[in-house]
Length: 461
Image 1 (cartoon, one colour):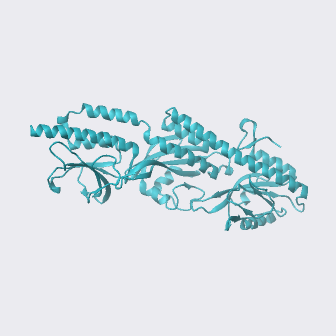
Image 2 (cartoon, rainbow, N blue to C red; image 1 turned 30 degrees about the horizontal axis):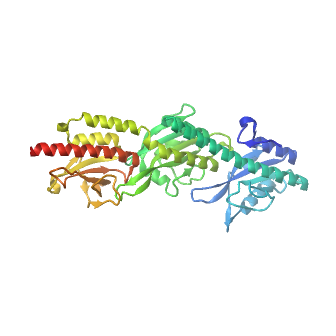
Image 3 (tube, helix red, strand yellow; image 1 turned 90 degrees about the horizontal axis):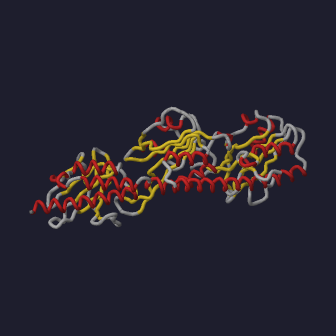
């Protein structure tokens, strides 16, 4: 028996396929050994996915890639999968298949017929007719499959641990977005990573990693296309998704296996001021290396590792370069003469640092709506309500409309020595403000308050 079994021949380990070849020798000439791994789709329905085959190559075309499981209380029954496998065995002149449960925490019994959600999958042994597995061979295989299951769990945990350590190392060393994408690609074993950031009603490509030259990526697509894709689940994989892809999404993934992972960041709800989780980024993983699931799909292990790494990215990506942005913004504000302050200038500089900003408005003190100034275009303000938690003092919020598009607005009272009711309004195309963006907004507000204090003093003088 080998010391370790891994996905491939890593550091002297046996690959899983090599181990299956070893067991095939135990079973005898002409035999076939198959492993199906447990997985679940976006609706949390459990199924088995064809993952490894040792033996007759042509068997692969006869086997179903996915076998559905029936939920029976706390157990998962593969009675339907057994019937399908027995049918295939009979057609190809094999004896009745022996099916072992794969589990790292209980015995890998043969022909038990049930799994638990914590199990790994099933192993199928086919032997040419009329021979059948003798009792000693069954016992040997039961021990071998338990070893295989324990090693599968070990390699999964080791791979996850290495992935997290590497990602943290790159984060601490201020790696670029492209470098972080390459780490994700390595440990999820994807050939291409595309990182998109949400700005208003669209997602724009901000970083990518590719193993080889390929056609140019789709640079931008509408958020509504992703909403359709994520209708049943935010995490989507190609082999579990049954819907039709929109034009842009289809152009992005092509004919390859793919996985979509949303990257949530900490944010603040515009209307309430409460903490919120905001899918600021989307990550497409495209093309799968041939180490698991026969190289055709992203496995459940890939999904778990991807989700852990993307969670780390969600806490880091928004703050990349934030200190430089704040420093550059401070420099631009300091260089701007108070006499040159205007709503147009404020809107343009704010939009450079706050991409989701639609525009700004100035509500002068003691004037009607007709005196409100807008830039770059008017938007219809709703009723202002005080937020439950402020990101800045004297803070109110409302929804607005601009040519049929909904906006989310923050209004700040600009107190000066001579005015108390004047307000500046920032209209956003998203219902949340990312925490890093809130720091930028705070700096802009402090400048606005200072500018209006000077302007009011000059006017009175």
